[in-house]
Amino acid sequence: QVRLVESGGEQVQPGGSLRLSCKTSGMNLNYHPIAWFRQAPGKKREGVACMSGGGLQILYGDSVKGRFTISRDDSKETWWLEMESLKPEDTAVYYCALAEITSMYCKLGDEYEYWGQGTQVTVSS
Image (cartoon, rainbow, N blue to C red; front, side, top):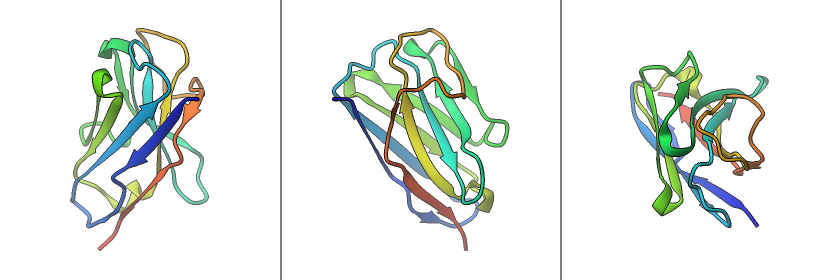
């Protein structure tokens, strides 16, 4: 059984930084696209960042470009989302996602079969 567990969400002041982690079990990460999504209350789910298998392609949502960084370590079955210069509008539940197929490409859409339970990020003074 594939399981994804996020951690690292907390309340932070505007301008601050956070690092989210996603640890997976039950599936080898090698060559599988990974991603981060978020959903704020009353809003649709938004693609934040994705990375293809092998890290050959990385995409970011327009609202986080230049502030967020996605990374992965397949040997540790873990990937991360480094978030800097956080804004109140970054407040949301953040989810990690993993695609079942292997691919040198990634997308910020509904291509992911496995999802974590979410971790809350609140940006507020």
